[in-house]
Image 1 (cartoon, one colour):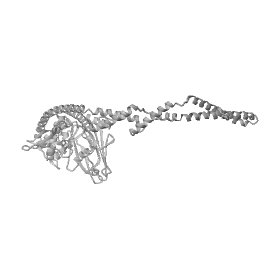
Image 2 (cartoon, helix red, strand yellow):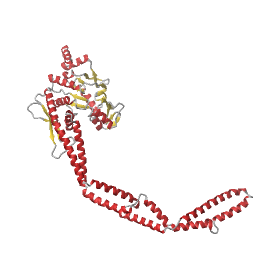
Image 3 (tube, one colour):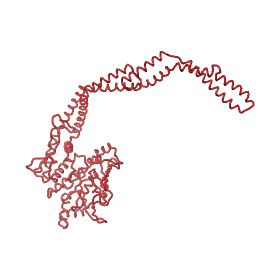
Image 4 (cartoon, helix red, strand yellow):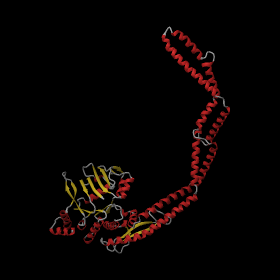
Length: 552
């Protein structure tokens, strides 16, 4: 339900804040006062296309804000889009348009696309009238309206679910068939790769380890010779370093008693002698453990050669062979699982059978719902100055072999405006007023089913009057008991049926430019407004009396 509407610098509205309640609210005013501007502003907040000329002359930008109390469908949509506000039961829409025509949209303070704003708007408000914002003209809306009216929403969802399952099964089977030839060749190539590498069994990290071992073993003789030479030079050979350092230490110790400054030198030489002795012990330990293992070297060289040969054959590197084997095994397993065409065809057939069963059940229920809806709307049309007119719901079967998420038929609303003419699709009804009245009849009948909380009727009384106008007012008031209804009207009979009454007027602002104003009416001022609608500019006691009678 629309709670409030805030308008700034929009066309001839400078600043306006309106609050709305439940039930049936009417908007009246003289021609040109700006009644439809309110509807246009609301549509802008709901994602309607914006032009630069909607910005009031001299202003930098126009801004529209609309706050709604929302139902379950809108709450679910907002939660799915992660656009929730402080109160999950309320939503605030805001739209700005600058003087250059650039617009921005917000939901609960978060910037959104116009597509998102329109998507949410369709769950909040439905506008009926002689303008283009008509959900009834869309085939998808007609199908949903019939299903909601007939209580078939759950059955329709099941058909959509079965259709999605069928699509997935059909896609899997078609892809498997299309890839059958190439898949066999690819499987043969992968099988050959696996066979080449299975026996070799390369392990992750193996190449780096075997390469390091090969380098060590292939240089074993040089390593032993170098280590032995170092031991000879440092500690065991003639004129070894340790022996010479010992001699130097002895000589300097005898001289240090004459000059204390040699103490630091002695300390450094002693430390060097300890480190050198450690190095000799480590070299002897290394020589004790190392040997020339020719057999192991031959094994390692053979492994290196085998890895190199496999890598050349598979156009890879030795280090990449383990990953290549794992990938080939995984892809071969996937191809084997997907190549069972018979199983995939059986799955598709089962999915088609489930879809067909659900679609047939929905079609049978739709036939009954279509008859009931057609009869109810046709009866309502007789009261709306469309005597002899009739409404039909046509269920057009899909072509043989064709499937759709919406079921086995296409739903189309047909209407004949009066007796003696054949029903035509609703989208081809020539008269805007006729279309508005049919929409009104459908809206009243389907009000209990539609999830939209606010219905707006923009001059649905065009071309009618008298008793028909009273009927329109009565129907709108009846509709207001189930939904919030806003109606722009020229007819006093319709206006008198409203639970609330807003009047639109136009007056010059301080700068001389016209400004549109809207104010709610109390009982006394409402009598005067309806009297004006009855009698024109001059209000007499007779018109006031008639107005009071209408309000009573």
